[in-house]
Length: 251
Image 1 (cartoon, rainbow, N blue to C red):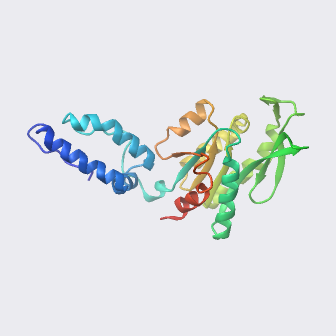
Image 2: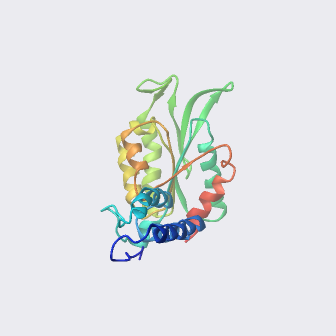
Image 3: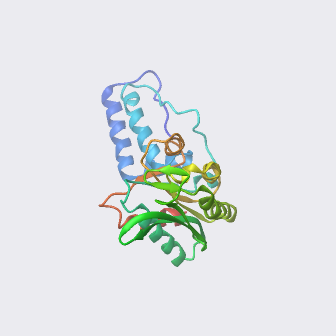
């Protein structure tokens, strides 16, 4: 139970302030956040944001205002969906590649795909998509025609030949899913968009990198109550892979 009203009106502000201090202390310890995140289909970051929004109502003596979508859910729905964002070249793909190695070292089933740059003479000329199980393909290159994203042409069919079977298999197998990335090039595939939506709705753990650009699909994904958005920075990028590992392996 999240709390009960006192009855008989809002009561003195001093009592409400004492209660608020106790509540804030619980949030600082992380205990209250974890309890609420487990009780409702919300990430810990979503719980923190919602609590901040409700502080004014609490001080005013009003009852909590819960979104209608909040309802107890099964344990399966609590499997983490972690989105890693950051500017280009910040190290998102490197962090995810490190995470995949850690998962494999711990004998944890992992599926999905990663992407990495293709370079010639030290110059970035394209991008490769690689199924964690092995197959890979160049799916974006300066010399390609088709869908243009910046200076690169995107071969949607080549991307789909590798990424879609990898993601489909990962969802069906039920292990940890890695998607690197959900960006403008990948979003040129409507089939990929549908499969990402399915993965987000499925009872699976998932880590995905996502671009910072404004886009209707990724904007909606970032607002999902079962998603936790993490921003990669210079200060956390070395520790982030092990943090992600702990989130995927902690019951």
